[in-house]
Structure formats: C-alpha cells, structure tokens
Length: 156
Image: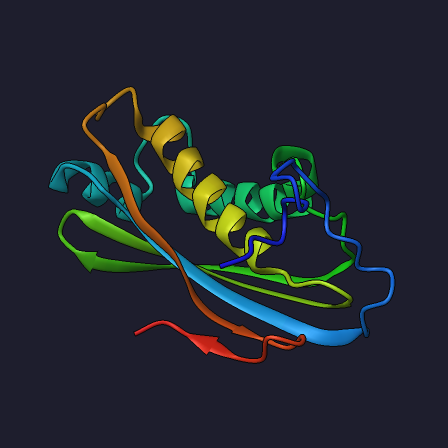
C-alpha cells in the first residue's frame, strides 16, 4: 500500500492537489463522550456554572474544523462551505457528537469533520472537568464521505 503523504524515499510529502478536479465533497464524522450520569443531567438542565455547554461545544467544533490545516501538518487549507455539529443523548451517561462538513475543492474534507467532533468533545470535557474528571472521549470515526476520485465511503 502506498501512502499519499510520503515520497518514494519514505519522507514526508504534502500531496500536490494542483491538477485535481474541483468537486463537491462532504464528510460526516461522529464520536462520543461518556461521563457520570449526574454530569449529563447537569448538561441537559444547563445548570453548570460555565453556562450552556453544548452551544459552546458546537461553536468550538466549528472553529476547530476551520483551523484543521493549522493543527494537522500536511492538511491543505480548504474553503469550507458548511460545518454542522449535532448532539444526541445516547444514554444516561453518553453524548454522541456528530459533524457534517462540505466544500467544493480539490481535496476532501474528512479531517475537518473529524476535527470538529474532536474539538467539540474536548470543549465539553473542559467545561465539565470541575465536576467530573472521569469523562472519556472515544469512538471518533469517519462515518461517510462523498466526492473526489476515491468516490464514496460509508462505515459499517
């Protein structure tokens, strides 16, 4: 298998997307954060001192996606058309975080969708750590991608 971010000698290499075709590309990612049930109850009831945790996490996820190229060394700075963040209460102690990202460009937007989920989860952790340091961020994954030469992908 040939990795796209290494040259023939195995050295780091930023992929040249100059000749690639512009297409509409989308990506969906998700992950979850688990916590004590009472922490989730406080988030749902908006009773924590720091305020509206999920709104802050949504904004953080959007900001994170927009800065992906600054965080991941070989990511291209791409024009993002849309980022969405959504939260689902999966159980008494788990929040699922979902993102959707869209662009019209020469390279995909998967890393932006994954970063959005990651940063939103980190924001929840940061805002709730005073009451629950046992939170766990996990299962961050690409769920779906469309567009580009490699076509569509959907996780199982």
